[in-house]
Length: 308
Image (cartoon, rainbow, N blue to C red; front, side, top):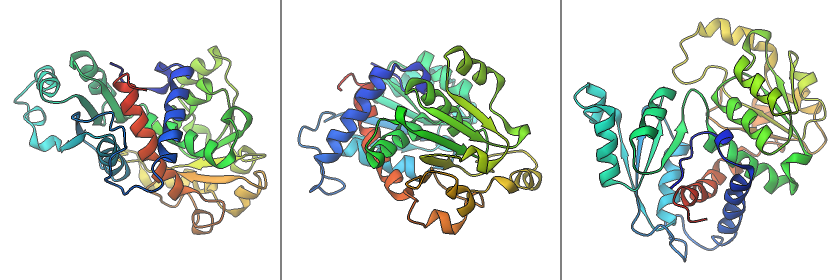
């Protein structure tokens, strides 16, 4: 049994096995419909319970398809439907019930502490579907997409992130260590990654550079990624934050700083952090990026069950 919580907790070897399995499974589904099971149906009879404390479109649908294609089934819970959210049942008792009924539990939450508490009490694998500290599902899928398009190992590419230092960037930074790629970050001075994460990168001899100029950060980039400036449940002064990031919009001038075949990725949903010209342009691969969530998450499920 394996949990999938943070990229930094998983070895490069195991992360590579997930990506390799996803590639093989995607190739074998060319003539199958969305709900057709893979021929080997490796998770037949397995039951995924997923709970979303924060809004979700891509993660919700892609995981439903992922478990169905592997031969299993899924149930989605709303936190307001449970005794847990109303104070009537402890988290430990909830975890025991989930472990009794389900085979694997996935949680999207606004609390890293809750992820850790569930990890301690569950007797089944736990998947972090997004928390304040990271979004590992998204970034591992992004690496799969980048290598699929570029046909190169990501360690040979220059990756650029422009925008807020949020949970998606946290996981990207962790991935830069595990996959040994160069990462440039473009953000305002007040919005740098946490000191503890930067110290971890330094300790692990990471190839990370921070710029307070979007165009400089994008110089010679093979891939440029961004995310919404205002994240879900962001409690900051939104007007001020948007103003602070005004010069960090991904536009055509920023994209021109990258290499000729530079691609653009966005985990979605989008806001004013990218222009329509870039988002709908030839360099944008956001729809391929979104679809690949299904294939990578199938392999993550298999990893959690020790079935890779």
